[in-house]
Amino acid sequence: MTTDLRNALLIHNPNAGNGGSGRRRTLDAARHIFAAGGIESELAETTGPGHATEMALRAASEGRGLVIACGGDGTLNEVINGLAAHQNGHRVPLALLPGGTANILAKELDLPWDIPSAAKKLVRGMVKEIALGLATPLEQPEKKKYFLSVGGAGPDGMIVYSLDLDLKARLGILAYWWQGAREVFRYRFPHFRIVVGDKELHASLAIVGRTKNYGGPFKITTGADLFEDQFEIMALTTQSGLRYLSYLPTLWMGNLRGSAGVHFHKSDTVICEPLDQSPLYAQVDGEPLARLPVEFKIVPRALKLLVPGNPA
Image 1 (cartoon, rainbow, N blue to C red):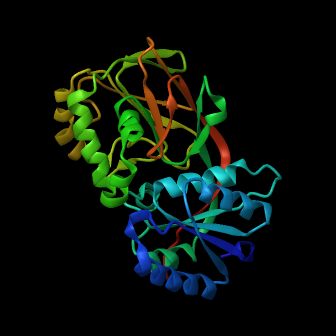
Image 2 (image 1 turned 135 degrees about the vertical axis):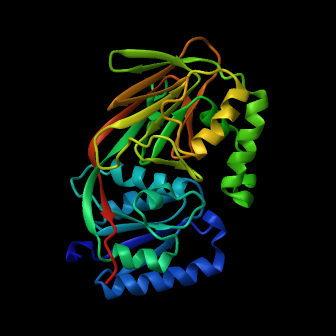
């Protein structure tokens, strides 16, 4: 561990994953572990949507040595948007303490979900530069967002867009499953255009992956690599809700690749655009973005990430 990571800010979302007072005790233990490794950390708690972005941006402006995010994928997305938006040349590394319900990055990095155990691995880790995805609504470019793990368009965008936030707070990832079950029976699965390089495809779903993990127990873009400057894009062409349901056992068994109507591509840019005036939505890291058309592109070396090592 280098001394460059001293003077850290630990951004905690107390509402993520129903952490409560028990989470604060584990965070105190994690802070002691970091301090023993030479990283003194100040705890700051978010109070609402967007607050983590503000705190991360301020941490970068203050010249902090490290930002540690403790929360779910939404909190992590806010933090990376704060860090990536800072343009004065000082890029603050990011570390993750898992505190949400999905924790895609924790799975990708093989981080324990137990917070003190994760801290023990992080304090012996190393900083690596990685690319981020940048999703830009082409008709509302001011709403562009960086993302770390996964973007999407079609039914998963509609699920995220329609999700009841109170239900999400109570049920966590189960709220996404509940909303997904509702959409299967009322969503019409319209086609939209997916443009990948010189290839064009009409499909009802696009998953734009930076990580192998998608959400819950599923891995969809298994050819994606967080340390490469590419997305893996998965597209489904079916317009049948029942056919979508039929893919679940195949997905569970890890055999989705090669199934009929399932297409995979590698690229650093993909554009999703509607074929008519019907509203279609995109999401990034499980958070709503905007209506299509949306461009997803790779931004190389956009983030410094503290990658865990092995505890002594």
